[in-house]
Amino acid sequence: LDPQTLSVLLRNLKPKKTFVVVISKSGETTETKAAFEVVRQWLKRSIGRNYGRQIVAITDPEHGSLRRLVAEEQAKDKLSFRSLPLLKGVGGRFSEFNMGLLHLSLIGVDIKQVLNGAAAMYQRCSSPDIFKNPAYLNAALHYILYRKKGKSISILMPFSEGLKSTADWYCQLLGESIGKKYARKVVLLPEGTERWVADKNRKVNTGITPVACRGTTDLHSIQQNNIEGQNDKAITFIRVDKFISDIMLPHNCGIISGKSYSGLLKLAQEATEWALVRQQRPNCTITLPEVSAFYWGGLLFFFELSIAFEGELLNINAFDQPGVEGYKNY
Image 1 (cartoon, rainbow, N blue to C red):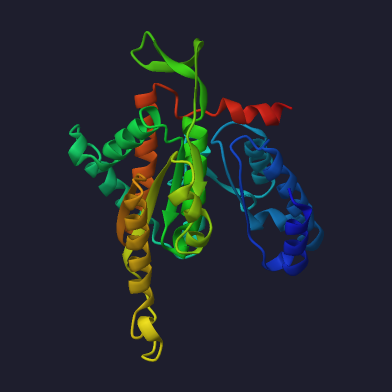
Image 2 (image 1 turned 180 degrees about the vertical axis):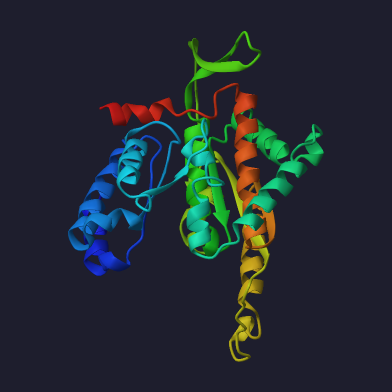
């Protein structure tokens, strides 16, 4: 809702060459609705009645104001307001393998490989043996650190610029899923399914504060606090074994002569681990063979499952977000 962002964008785009993707389950999310209404009028003024052919809507398959708009516009023109359905019952933060697929495809990512990576991680995380199930093990360790050791801050630090946005997404995943006021009560329904409701008699106020940062940039800022500040943090690094391209330094650079960028980055990550262990600060490392569609899909699914397991251990509903509704209602 920062007016400067959209103003600059619309000043620099040509309406006849602009394709718009709008995502909203209900069509009533204020930020999305406000931006979309402005963009719609901007397209309409330049293109005329066929402006809707440059819009794709990703929304609820049956209900909501955006779905109604899609139906109205398609009744006039079949090529207008083409749409894709959101999976029912899946919150936005868990929807990267649904609502995010069009964006990935548009920028050339192989979405089949993303889904294959998620499927492979699902297989790895289906074992009931905690030592063979990385997502369950990760959840259990973070649960122990939170409940028994007072580590109420979870820092995710990828040593890869390409994973910075993944760390931002992780903040939403953890914050909305684990930050809950009430315990969960499971109600068994006659047909054998479950309904989860907030147990208003059991106030728990669970909450791990997520922090997204990146190596090596934030080693010159947040790392000072990690090493010498309050010992209330659990830190997760993401390390990349192989980069798509690399840079070699020349041989007249002193101690870094002839080194590769990727080698220096790995060394910085190892040194950060060593410094934390030396101060008895808990940390772990997730290693990706490379930042590819397959391994990225697996990484996202790993985090989603880990948070789901953590919700079970805490006995809360990790899939709703009642606290978000407070600001919306106001």
